Length: 320
Length: 268
Image (cartoon, rainbow over all chains, first blue to last red; front, top):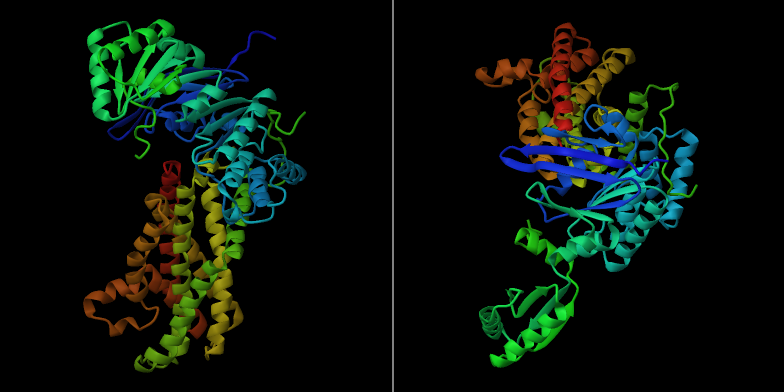
């Protein structure tokens, strides 16, 4: 076999809704059999990208291909090779888990015998056999998400789109979904997932495209994104906001390679030379008569990356 | 191959049932299960017309004079039509709920016939109407409704009413897809329905209404359907009303089928 081909190619994708530009020229390439993360705040264009790739929306400009098939001209072929699971469990609450999976099986035109067998197999795989014949409206949040994910897998899609697959899940259910995604990729599925959770992208995705304002502002491995910023984050917690403000002023005045950033009662510095920076910082604070309350030294998170790239936190706009 | 291993399937070339039809039946099957799982939907859509029958038969009926006809015989065809008209609101509510829940989004991503979500839903609502109208017919006969013609004409009248209800389902499919919110769809439906049902020949003769209202009340779709059904059960000449009713049905379908399909594609 030749080098792994791209499962998805996106070039200059544009989409407007009235006056709002949702996608402002998105370019992406998703290698086969990998997890690709689309990271960004609400309204960044993640869901619109997924909707165009899953043929639900037609783009205004640019083009997108899934497994070599154009999502507009060859939409029907694309639909046969994709699965979609969203942040809302898009199953019928009045139908049982089994009935939902059989309905999807019929609608993706599995042979009649396979409709029944595939539903039973997925219920088993997602540990829903006991609840299989109960209406989905009686399911817990985690169970609903599992049946939704199972519904996306009925036709064994080589490409799976997951729109915020763990939003609103408790940590236990979230870990289950993560493990499932790992299994899918191990079996050869290409997964594109959107997330607002940086930890999720960090943990699952081989590559991450950071999206903001309908554009890709960075596209790299999580590790590379983090090293762009610096290798060490130093966070100094102060007793109160006034003290923090004073510490910030003292550090800013002292100069140095890393510029301090004030965040409530915390002052944060990011540096490629962590040990040196730490010593300098503590000396400066001591000389300035500022008493730190707490001290944290860690690797940068994707949130730090996001903040550095966009000037705002990823979770902003979550209330929108 | 494990449970999760992907495969790219090829559509079978030969099939016994055309794909659009099998998709429609799958969606209709789902709609009918909903009525079984949520019997409230059926109960409310039946209690209300039963209350109407009892009210008009025993409370208002005494004050309404229809020359040459027992009021109950005048009333029941009107009630059958009103039942199927109000039943069409369920189409709006059902589709709006599907938009809200994200189910429509999933359907749009499947390799199914895109029209099937609408044809299947409206077909399920015909099934529901059959049940409700049979029940209402039983109630009608219990409160003294008499068929003055024969069962053949009675069946024709019922089929006309079901067809009319089906037609209105497409109107309300459009409403549901426009509003995308079940409560809003329900709230919007009543002001559309009320004048059509009450400023009509469904419950009272049109000649008892003010002169300016009569032309509307005589020729609007609910009236001509009710009058045609009434003529078929009373044995008077149904031709004119039947032609008008079928013309309305054809006209409404011609406008609202494409309109709702167009809205469906833009519902997400």
